[in-house]
Image (cartoon, rainbow, N blue to C red; front, top):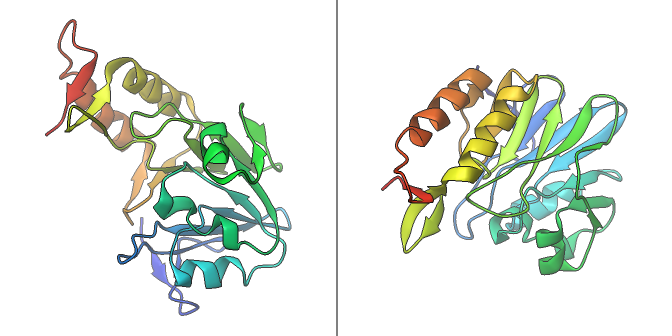
Amino acid sequence: MRVYYCYNLGMKKINEYIQFLPMSEGPLSADVYVISVDNKTFVFDIGSSDESYALVNSLDNPIYIISHFHEDHMGNINRLENGLIYLSKYSYDKSKKGIVIDKDTDLSSHVKIVLIPSSHSKGSLGLKVNEYLFVGDALYSGMNKGRPSYNQNTLKETIDLINSMDAQFVIMSHDETIFSKDEIVVKLSKIYQKRIKNDPYIYVD
């Protein structure tokens, strides 16, 4: 699927109601997604850069959803000037701000927060918007003994969750590719097939 350029604060457009500010380096700042649907503005992740800060604080009373507690995804949290913040307990423990989400939660008729099992980061939240599923970094590997890896059980739970959802497309942070759900399931399943008996981790280095 194509991503269109939108010359407003360097943003890019996915469709008529989803735009995003791409990730940047120095400091590392994750993609910031702005979703305008159901007469509301939802923001998935808030980045850590000044550009991200300028964007999120230019919005009128948005609803923020923080995917996980890593700095590049929520570094601007103490700079937010208005709006509701939804996040997991792990993210709340880092920021002491916002409303803790501990179960799948509908925010509107077309928008739903989804808990995603993740080897990358505990307490990962995704956002289902119509046919799109935003997953942050939840599908990336974590680290074990200094090596990139997936926990076997967690990866199986992730695959089962993605497979069960009625989303058509999956959007991952740090990657402008819009994947089909089937592509993601196949990709993760190939990793899962590399598991070794009695080893809880699958190493991907």
